[in-house]
Image 1: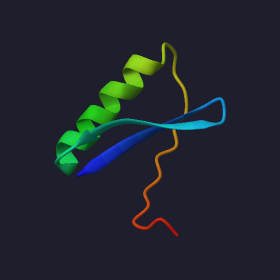
Image 2: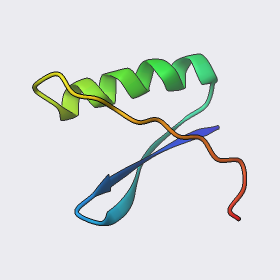
Image 3: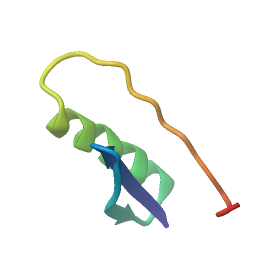
Image 4: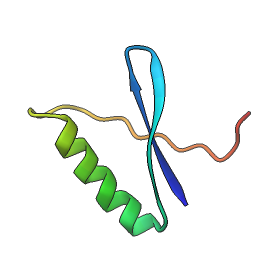
Length: 51
């Protein structure tokens, strides 16, 4: 299961969870398109542990 988190004004918020990697990538693109109205650079990071 993949979780999306957002970072805004110094606060990290959970956005949603998606079950499969292909669906997660597709949903990630949709979420970014909904959040922005102009071209921008986006950073995507992955972490496997809490350390």
